Length: 317
Ligand SMILES: Cc1cc2nc3c(=O)[nH]c(=O)nc-3n(C[C@H](O)[C@H](O)[C@H](O)COP(=O)(O)OP(=O)(O)OC[C@H]3O[C@@H](n4cnc5c(N)ncnc54)[C@H](O)[C@@H]3O)c2cc1C
Image 1 (cartoon, rainbow, N blue to C red):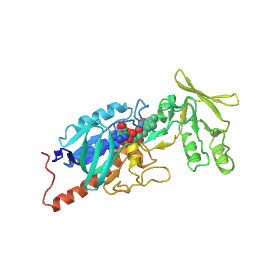
Image 2: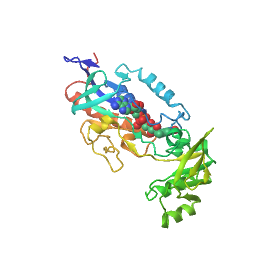
Image 3: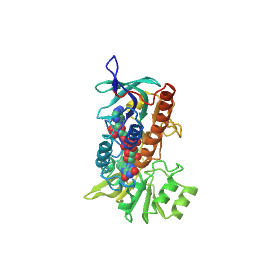
Image 4: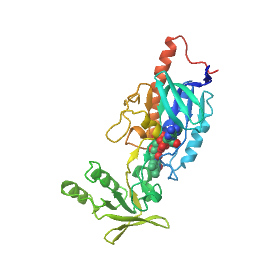
């Protein structure tokens, strides 16, 4: 890190977000001798979960422990700084971004956004309290622990193309899967395919999700019935964090940032994005892989520019 005449710290790459995507990006750039500042502050996606599953060599690790080890390993690289501080604004252009932190300003040649997504709790009684305990997004993450139990899948838009394949897939973990549409009908071929897959369909509106001594115990319906259910899968609406929204980057139909598949560059040159904020394929190891991809693409560009200027790296003094 260097300090210029305006006393602003200058780095090669500012990484916004210290989850799997940001940490992996910082590690890759650190090992490539680039000067990196990783900043982290605010909510993270799996805050409610007690363990991260299905991450090679880290299966069943508490999320905080995973981050602690990643930071410990980053500390090995003197050219990487990690700060628990929020990014408020990003201005400027490729080669010279000015980043306003909660307590400082920083100049960076490139930016990697790795801020994850915010899940907006579904407006059903009990949902927010059970999210991450008995309500999950993904069976690859939490299916094994709940296998064989009474499962539900909440499909508020049952006409969506992924409804049938997703509910059918859940049968790989449980013989007792019910699809709840919360008042929307589901007919024709989708209904026939679900029934053929052994998925029970329940269209009655839900009154509340009942939080028992060990988490979700049942789903109370508005007609007075109650259906035993211990594990529910749901995909709440997600939104980008404020600083990402302020950049007005191009989004896809799901509200994810549009990025180049290889370089992870967004619609603004020099700003890359990795992890949950740029894909519906959301998992910790996928986010980490995207972080490395973004970092490698940036490193290639920065190094080519340095070499053509007769240097191999920026001064770290
Ligand atoms: C309940 C639940 C359980 C899950 N369980 C698993 C699991 O078992 N296995 C698995 O593989 N995946 C799991 N996932 C998915 C996994 O958590 C995400 O795919 C992964 O965390 C995405 O990593 P990320 O780095 O993109 O974002 P995040 O992990 O969300 O990290 C983003 C970081 O950016 C920071 N940030 C945001 N805004 C700013 C700002 N302005 N300035 C500075 N920092 C900022 C946040 O504080 C956060 O630390 C789970 C998700 C949920 C919701």
